[in-house]
Amino acid sequence: MMIMQMKRMLFVFFMLQLPVSGVLAVENLYTGEVAVSNQSAEERSQVLPDALLQVLQKLSGQREISLSRELEEALADAERALLSFQYKSVDRSYPDGTPVQELRLRAHFMQAEVDRIVQRIGLPRWQQERPDIQLWVVIDDGQSRKLKPVEYDYAWRSVEDIAAMRGLPVSWPELDEEEAQLIDMRLVWGGFTDYLVERGAPGDGVAIIAARREGPLWSVRWNLANSEGNWSWRTSDQRLMFALAQGVHEMTDKLASTNTIAASEQGSWSIDISVGEINSAENYAACLGYLQGLSLVNTVDILGASPGRVEFRLTLNASADYLRDMFNRGVTILPASAGSTYDYEFLPQ
Image 1 (spheres, rainbow, N blue to C red):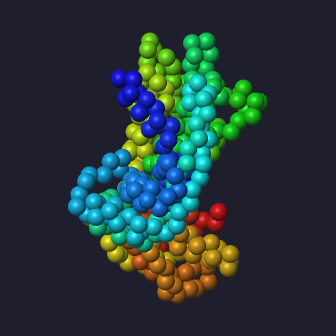
Image 2: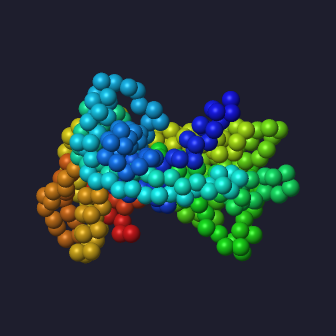
């Protein structure tokens, strides 16, 4: 039992550590990071399949990928998809404050090659436009309730690591002393995500994580809300970081399921759209850049232009319905009229 607990601790502590503030960069989605004992070519060759598997998990949104002949072949040939690599040393600490240093290989894989692997294996694709989730964590120690107390820093680091490993962008609220005093802790502890949204909490989603001891266990209540819906669940464990690890995985599963393209809906589609309210060269450049930056869009062609309006032809890598759903949410481009399937307006940011 003691050995198993130690293995679980090491697993959580040595998760990947990638930047997790804001929407994850595409580079991070195609990067895997694994622990190594040295910088030899032999060691690197042995762990590259693990790094590639992490990338496939981030891109698909799947916590576990079923073993198949195609997956085995891709992992065995991971070096062929490698673009570059580097090593980094990471300083961490155990719950008792004992420092831990680990050497990690950070492997960057070629986007086009990995995308072919995803299609060949038949994996779903979690869209790369992933809204940031702001985490509000409250600890009840029996006497008071505190936001993200520093004595549990090791646990907050494990949350960041697991979110990064799964490809989920998260951030923490940054409050000065005065702002913290204005927070109604009763509402936060109660899981009222609407209260934080009304206060103008940044990010595209909010998660309230309320934790306290109940006998020998840490009991953690999760309340998550974003534009797609609201979810609530509970996790528990004798160790706080394990209860948090369960919850972060479940949160990622829920969010990925709302924004995932099935393998059967991936391929090549073409759609023509007309975008209005483009009244300057700056607006045109911003609109074109926005369209070219969408993960659903492979190419953008200009069909024509008239005062304030541009006609585009988009080549997509998934059904056009996904693009229409994105536009219907009205973030940067939105329908010009109800029910329109081709006429849109541009919203300068």
